[in-house]
Length: 78
Picture 1 (cartoon, rainbow, N blue to C red):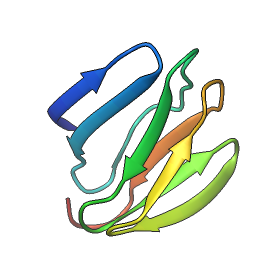
Picture 2: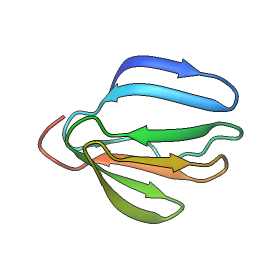
Picture 3: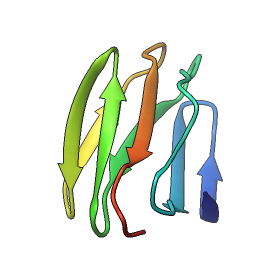
């Protein structure tokens, strides 16, 4: 993954990130931070609390603290 920009505070994390094809983050959770994933282009698969969903361009999903999550780019594009 390529980190393009980042803003992190105790309760909020905002990251602008480029995910190469067929990559993923490690499954993890945050103690205090809330995260919001907003997809700028393409689509990703986001697993939140054991449930997988496909998120498309211009859609977003919030992840609460203490909820395990993992993002995947299972496609052929960034």
